[in-house]
Amino acid sequence: MSVDEILLDTEERMEKAIEILKKNLSGIRTGRANPGLVDSVRVDVYGSPTPIKQVASVGAPEPTQIVIRPYDASTIKDIEKAIVQADLGFNPQNDGRVIRINIPALSSDVRKKMVSRIKELTEEAKISIRNVRRDANKAADTAAKDKEIGEDQRDDVKDSVQEFTKKYEDMATDFAKTREKDVLED
Image (tube, rainbow, N blue to C red):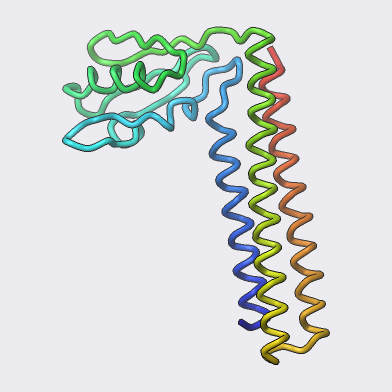
């Protein structure tokens, strides 16, 4: 592998780790309604489990309510059933046209659990980033051993990889702090 290939692959994989962290953090509940809270719900329609966003529009018109409008009115019961089965702690209310989910206020115990879950997800992302660093350093060592790149280039690659690692770990920490603040606010 060339120096550019190693660095490009490293940055892409670290970026993916951050994207996965963002997605996972968006699913963590705060005291406010957020359409991301139901993103993980899969609805059994047309013979296959389908993401809720593909069968309905999801919005949060009020700070304590999520509104789900099915594109096809015949799927409303399936959507309601999927939300209940997802065991998110929500009680959907169906009026025949839309499903409303009232978001209850979080207790301090629940908030603490959410913060610890945020920390777990962040640590998983950091571990993933470090694994990418390890793979990149191995690729640089192998390329130097195979005489594809010189030892100076290998050292430069390792320095760049370490900079990427620091940058993406800092990003993960920043996202986590922001999310923790959202969870702990009333």
